Every structure is written in C-alpha cells, then in structure tokens.
Amino acid sequence: MRLGRVVFNRLATLINSYSNYNPSPLSLKQFTDFGKHANSNGTLYPTEVKSYEFLKEELLVRLALMSKEMLYLPDKLIKTSSVELVYSWYLKSFEDMLSHKEKKPSQDELKRFSKTLNNIVNRHADVVQQIAMGIVQLQETYGIDQKTEQNIQYFLDRFLMSRISIRMLINQHLLIFSERKPDHPVQIGAIDPSCDVVGVLKDAYSSAKFLCDQYYLCSPDNDFVSVNRVEKDEPIELVYVPSHLYHMAFELYKNAMRAVIEYHGEAAKTYPNLKTLIVKGQEDLSIRITDYGGGIPHAKIPLVFRYMYSSAPRPAISSDVYSPTTTAPLAGYGYGLPLSKLYARYFNGDLHLASIDGHSTDAFIYLKTLSKDASEILPIHNKAAAFNYLNTNRESNKDWT
Image (cartoon, rainbow, N blue to C red):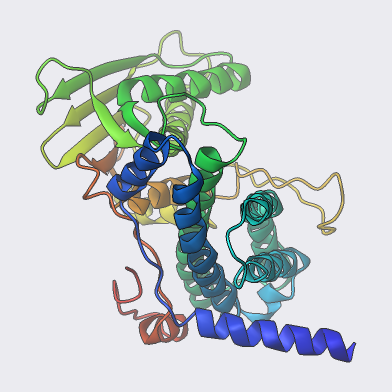
C-alpha cells in the first residue's frame, strides 16, 4: 500500500510538472511534409526516430494537461465510476509513455513504442461514452446547476479537443511506421493530400440517408453544387483528414434529415431536398448544408452546441460501468454537434448554424484552403485556465494555442 502511494505521488508530481509546458501545435503542412519525407528516404528508420523523439515528450505534455484539468471537475463528478475509470486510463497512459523517456531508439524500442501507442488508442476508445455516462450519473443523482454545467462545458471543449489531437498524433505515427496502413495508398497517414471534398460529403450523406430510411422508411434527397474559385473547372480537393470531414458532415446530414421528416410528417408524400453548396476560395473552403425542416428559434441555437442538450430521447444506462451490457450511444446525449464543431476548429476552421424559425436551417463548415494555415488549435494550462474554472466570466483565447 505504501509503495503504491509513493508511485502515485511521483506520478502526480510529474503530471503537475509536464502540465506546465505548452503543447507544440502542428499544421497540416507540417504533418504532410514529414510524412512525404518519411516515404521518400527508402528507409523509414531515421524519420521514425524523429517521430519517436518528438512524440515521447509531446504526448506526455498533452496527457498531463488533461489529467491535471480533470481535477478541476466537481468532486461528485470525479467520483462517479465512469469518470474515475477515464482518469485511471489517463494515468496509465502517462505512466506507459514515461517508460520510454530514457530509452534509446533501437529497433526493438521502436516496436515497443508502437505497441504502447496502440495500447493507448485501444484503452481510450470509449472515453467520450464514459465521460457522457458520468455526467448523466451526476445529473440523475445530484442535479447540475448552471455554474457546474458551464464548467463541464468548458472542460469538455478542452478535454475532447485534446483527445482529438492525441489520437491524430498517434495515428499518424502508427499509419506511417507500423504495420497499420492508411485507408487509401495516396494518404499520408490519416491525411489525404488531395481529399475529394464532394466525394466525402456524398459518402456521409449516403450513410445518413441509410439510417434515416431505416428509422423513418423515407428520407429527403440532396442537391450538390460545387464552385472552385481557385482551380477553375477542377474538382474541389483539399489537404485534410477525410474521417474528420466525414464525421462533421454525417452529423449535420443526420440532423437535417430528422428535422425535415419530423417537420413535414412521416405521412408526407414528398419532402423538400437538402441543398449542399461547396465553395473553394483563396483562404477558406466553405460548405453550406441547408434543410427545410422548420428551422430553430434564434434563442435556441446556442443550446445545440451544449454537450448536455439534445432534442432526442436520452438512452437508459447501467450504473455499472464494467457491465458488458452497458452502452452509451452518443445519440440522445447531445455530443454530436459540439464534437463536430471541435473537429472543425481543430485545424483552425469552424462550424456555425444560422436558422429561420419556421422555415430552414443553414449549417456552415469552414476549413482552411492552405495547409500551412490549418494549424492545430489546442488547450494550454495556465493562469487563465485556472481562473476560467473558477469564474463564469471567462478570459477568452488566453488558454488556447
């Protein structure tokens, strides 16, 4: 027991130390240039060593930042079984990364490092669901007042953005240097240097349409219009992570279809088409998805980006986080749109809604046209962050890269 306490105290001291460092944000250009260099050398070893040396420090910083910030959550939330489990995952992952700190990058060590990264990805696979369950447990047991809700919202924006970034770093390393391979041979890790934007949007629409047909036995069609102001008459391509764009588009199409069907009624003979406009400009690639599903009252638009807000019924959950029958589907928890906004913001883009109550809703995705401008936006732990956890009148932008 005493030895365990000593180890935990040492770990807490190191986490506190690493959380004082700022993360080092990378741009999509830096990611792709590094990946191209790795594939052009004939041997991956020298580049893999560079990635190894960077990640074994950078991941300690990013894991420490969120481990530290979890302690700012309300005590009753930290003590829920779900959040305790997530916290233990972060401590274990930090400890695993520490085991590589003093190692030299031999071939065996590089293989062991890739195994550690794989273990972290698998260990953290259900983090979002477990955090959602913990918040529901808190809400159902004690209730959540306005200040607590605002603090949870602030924490989740930072925590989930950090999670996206950690997975991005790990996946890039594994897809380039391990036996795992990208979905398509042209990809540099998870990044497609010539991402077919319209193609990804059509895939996302098809998946959402399939779900809508299953649930309602009908679905609205979609009109696609693309305008390329940079390369005239050429398909719209972008250096981007296709899975991130797919996630955002699928969520927006799913919401749009549900709005249209429920506004016009399942017995309607026809439904107004969704409309998707994609425009590539010199600085921004902009996507507008329009549905004629009755719109959203202006006062409610901020609510749809709150994690604990959902217009869908919330699923029931088990109080036993280790139960094999425990599930925490995201539908009904209100995480879809806030998470999509984080994916958009991660590489310096954004996601907004504009609506005409009683008529229609426009969803806008903004991405950076140039990969050098698409830099990670990451939370940092500083005095502003500590102040913001204690005050609802927050200092904006001082606690992000």
